[in-house]
Image 1 (spheres, rainbow over the protein chains, first blue to last red):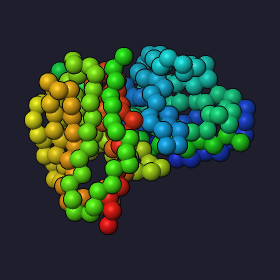
Image 2 (tube, rainbow over the protein chains, first blue to last red; image 1 turned 45 degrees about the vertical axis):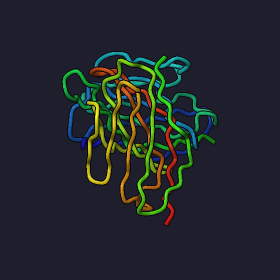
Image 3 (cartoon, chains in turn cyan, orange; image 1 turned 60 degrees about the vertical axis):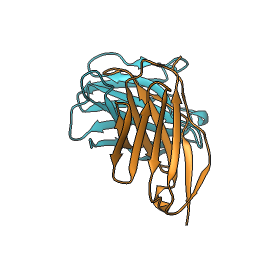
Image 4 (cartoon, rainbow over the protein chains, first blue to last red; image 1 turned 30 degrees about the vertical axis):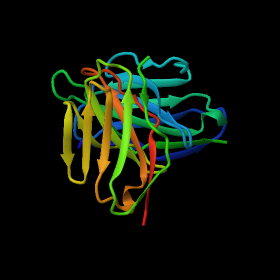
Length: 119
Length: 111
């Protein structure tokens, strides 16, 4: 399967600081990547769809000015959590879309995730 | 709004038995169906996908799809303790549409 990496795997920061998380597709080009957030013992929540060369599409209720997404190349998307607060502490996971069969949904492969703790 | 429903569990299955995980979806136009496994504290890992009605087998895993009933299932034969995880069902339409994920079923294999 396709390999997706994330960096860092975990980060601890002080309240009010900004944190950048990188998502890379290692062995394929990804025109679309997705960012998810998952709180403990809860399901995945899609935050936004990141498209190479264009603005990200945010899900309802997700603050685009707080969660900045940049997809500057076919292998890299970044999520920046600006002015992080303790309530932003969560497990952030990206996925990359691999084209599938015609007429079928593309397959998503997930990165290993980044655990963010805001003090 | 598209919905994907799964029993949250926990589902406990003895080692060596067959684990059966179920998923229903609301959008009749859905075309693609995926099963992911997520270990505690880890990200989801793709197990298999299925597009056509019927069964699809991959090793100990079998995905079953019934579009008329809007139902997809995952069978795990000869269950092992290492199969203990949360299993996520995901449903999609065409191309680059985002997937809709269920909330997952927590499976525990009892040695």
